[in-house]
Amino acid sequence: MKASRIAAAAAAAGTAVLALSAPAFAHVSVQPEGTAAKGGYAVVDFKVPNERDNASTTRVEVNLPADHPIASVMPQPVPGWKAEVTKSKLDKPLTMHGEKIDEAVTKVTWTADGKGIEPGYFQKFPLSLGALPENTDELVFKAVQTYSNKEVVRWIEVPQEGQDEPENPAPVLQLSAATDDHHGTASAENTTAKTEKAGKTTAAGNSGSGSDTTARVLGVVGIVIGAAGVAYGVLAGRRRTAA
Image (cartoon, rainbow, N blue to C red):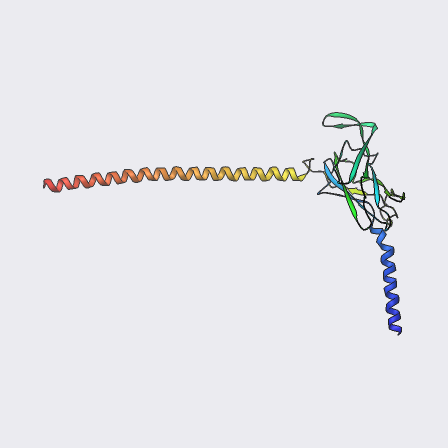
């Protein structure tokens, strides 16, 4: 009897721990598709889970870091959602591709056309960003999540190194070291692969051409030797007849 009570208490305690720990993992986050290198371009996904059982997420607002403005920001179309891009004047103009830019995207807002993110689901919102700054290791994006019951959750607390994660942490994008190709490593790899393929093709073509030339030379030599043999045979026959 005591054993069954202890087991029941343990199960209840385990359920309580799971219930308390689950929300810590369910928050708005950002991850790159591939790498996000300093000075380069990247596509990043903002993952927005629904934390409520009785309401849907109908609006998501992502604020871009003002201390590290990004000149080029383009949202990818998401079915069932309308994206709105907000630009603002910059205190210090940026230089991009040799041109000065005095404004940049400061906010992207997605509004649901239909049901939005229903309970038990999540949605990804992709953004193309560039050029990423070279003077920082991370970018902080403060996000605001709005539910169909008018509840608003602000994911704006900046995580601090060495401290526990805040209750409503802001999405943080970690930047990798800069690469020689600021457009990403994929294009460099593709270029290398194409070059190697072209080299192999050229080598194969040269090898085939050399083989054809050798075959032709050997064929001509064979014909000459054959003709010489026939001539020798004719001469030998005439000598025998004359004798």
